[in-house]
Length: 514
Image (cartoon, rainbow, N blue to C red; front, side):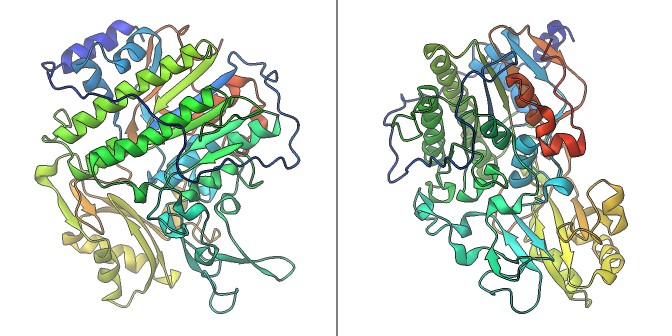
């Protein structure tokens, strides 16, 4: 679509430019406590920077978690001299109808980006799920089978420090009985059922790297356990619960990106194999500001002060990173993908209802329907102790108007919606629960959260940037799952080597390659 249409839409959405700006300090320091690089050689072929037969030598995906498409449009209109405006209007291909994964929790949303797979294929439904085929942590595979599978900061040795204590707490991991009868812990990279773009890249001799918010995000190593040359996961739970604290945490990732472009590990020491050809990172200040401040209107055109500052900060840091790529001579050869794993909701903080997620469980158990696990924010999923009660559970949830339930997919309906079969797959939830707009099921007071299936969760920005791209606005609906195959195509790596591509056939993003 002609860029003039984008300009017209920006003009329509434009508001008076704010005089408020945020002063962003220069990045300082290159080491972070006791973080050390990991350099597993395994059976990978020797590293080579010459493999690529694609249009690019490098590809990076950056996720500004929580960012909505309307946030991007409003921001570019308000700040026409910003980095985002330059990216979108000069050399960016904007996919204006990009969609996050369903559910939109950040764990399956990350799998969608880098495995190109939906939960029915990746096996990852939420950072807190349930598996009927695994045993509880510490059980030694004795007793009843079936357990919660939690992949948040609770798995760290010490989630009060940035390093997470330096390792996962094995006693917190679910257990699995092997075919030869022994009982072993299930690490995050054992839990995902498909490989990742990083495994494909590493297996073809490329350097790979990724940064995210919990140690459990090492699952992006893939089933091999070593798909990433470096995984960098400073613990977000250890960050100060202020905007400044979240921005400082984000700066760890921005600094890692800078070090990677310089051919270093995240801590600034030299990587003998050089800069990564395939890498990525996420950022948390925007999602924190949404959760703790939100918007002051119903359509998201007026963010609270904290969110406005978070958007400005991210914009300026992005500008610094692009300059780092230019200074290192990599900008022309890099395809930069910019977007968000997931949105957030509800948007209108003035008209929302927040319930503990335990209300959903209590409503069922009060009528004799025991629940194995409920996970919910602005949408939810549920596993029952007795699957024969699935239809009764649906009727109860829909019949209790005070819960804020919009719809329930139950049993066969879950499969018909493309999520997989709860009868055949031990990880597929029995119930998929949609929240009414304005409702949030949260364990603690907050303005917004994610995980649901509404436009507030799914309508996310996605922009491809390179100095040689012609600015374009593409209106066809695309999925974040297409990022994975696009990363491989950019480098000339075989798409057929990605399980998600083979099993789901997710296409490359349109309009990018000749």
